[in-house]
Image 1 (spheres, rainbow, N blue to C red):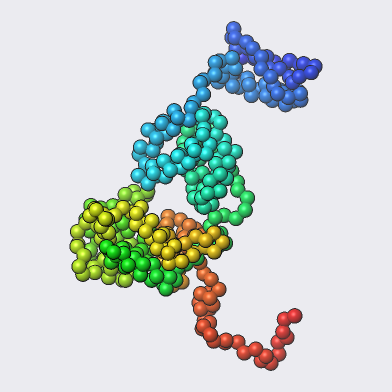
Image 2: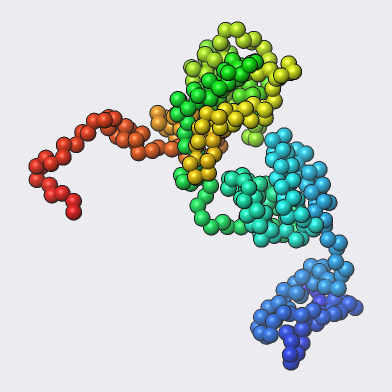
Length: 377
């Protein structure tokens, strides 16, 4: 340590110990913030180490980094290399964050800010969506910590159950309810058959609506059909930079190869009113509309009606009754099987009873049989 770097304690009668420091010809004093002499000594040693490393208490403070400047750096230096969906999620979360919090400086954002942001969102959005937006903003803030711009911010702990607990899950859709939604699609004055085919594609594939929408016959597509002895769906440009292949159930491929539809371009194309292809967001809104009109309530407490994601969740829930968790995670294309178990495996009492060998309507236990055992009290 530099011999010219010194820190001495100075005792005051009515205020905390002072730390008088000297580095060469520069000197000054800062407060220790404590009346305890031992603690003041420890803080003096830490200050002496910082002085030896170049820290100067009397140096002018750097100008505070504004939220607008930080946001621009984050988008230019980090987001530019991320996927389109990642950038879309950031834009949505950023808009909500600026609307609710109205940040001016990055230094003002801490765990309490994130907690308040999440709490305000939960008043109008689902708990899962609110948590997702909070995590996206937190990830953006902590990028600055990773490059030494400021301290990291932790995700505040939330009391109560997780949005993915069984009490908060939407229930599965029955086949009869889904057919009611399809019948509403067929009543459309134009392109009803194409919309119904798209709905059945969701029902039989378990794909996300954006994935089914992007499925194409072109080999250069991000999500495309690979023909061979066994038809496959190829997923390219993923987070892990790998190509995944999914076989899909036979019912789905019967839809894909249904006569009368072209073998080029998008597999499930629904023309819009002006002849161009209907947007994915418009199709999602249409599915939600049919779910509401058909009265398919998937959560009684909140009154939520069926959405495209509920159709996917229903497919995975059906599949979970006949396959193991590892295969289900591959079909769902989850990197972590815990995600599959947490959100999509929904064994109710009836399905578990069938697995254990019970038959519907058949009481296999004969009550009152004298087998020497005493009844429970």
